Length: 313
Ligand SMILES: [Fe+2]
Image (cartoon, rainbow, N blue to C red; front, side, top):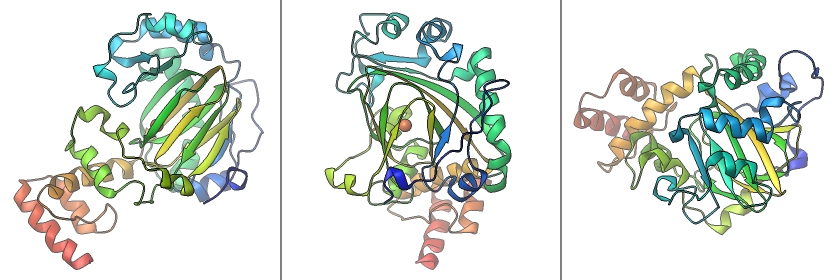
């Protein structure tokens, strides 16, 4: 679809003083949020919390189950729990990332008061814009990605709205339209929410089937420091690091609607096991409401979905 130069972009009007802010044109936000990728701008390149020594120190404060670090071996992304421990600690791996190939993920920075403050500053700035199109921002979370040249994050989707902010180095994001069911079937999303997956359900969103022909419809989005990109909910993507060291901050959230739809996806995943093709969230009010009121037994809901599904078809 759109090449990167045709994507809506951020507008630089941020002040270096005061709270950290994303800079984005309100019209661009309103027209594209949760539909298409668009660029934002920020001034986080020299933020003290986003330099390698501070990030290494953070990794020593966070609980160990919120850290993933490895040297890019097979399965590092899709089955992180099955890898042998890295020979260096997470903090050492971060400090040495310029010299030794590595990919590091720090999860749930919001558990650390300083990083929570930074996340809140950034999200407070866009919450009024978000309120116009997807009201009820909630479940704010933040993540840090540190990687070395050639690090590659395979094709996958994430269960939240995301702004990925490039702090250091360069990356290229390959992203697909969130509604593209050729590259990401509805069943993949439903099964993830239902936990009906082979392997560890925590990482089921990461383990998605990729075919070379998908690339023809990818949005190619190069990112450099000072830029950020919006990821619509469930928009599939893959990411390649293009510089010796890359630092990216991800700020994510849910809304009233995404939380509501998550329950519907989960219900859909369960009824799919019975051979029923359920209506997608948002296409049947009756089914959406039934899924959210509560699943009182798989048979009852399956029968309802089948009736509604027949009508919808
Ligand atoms: Fe992702």
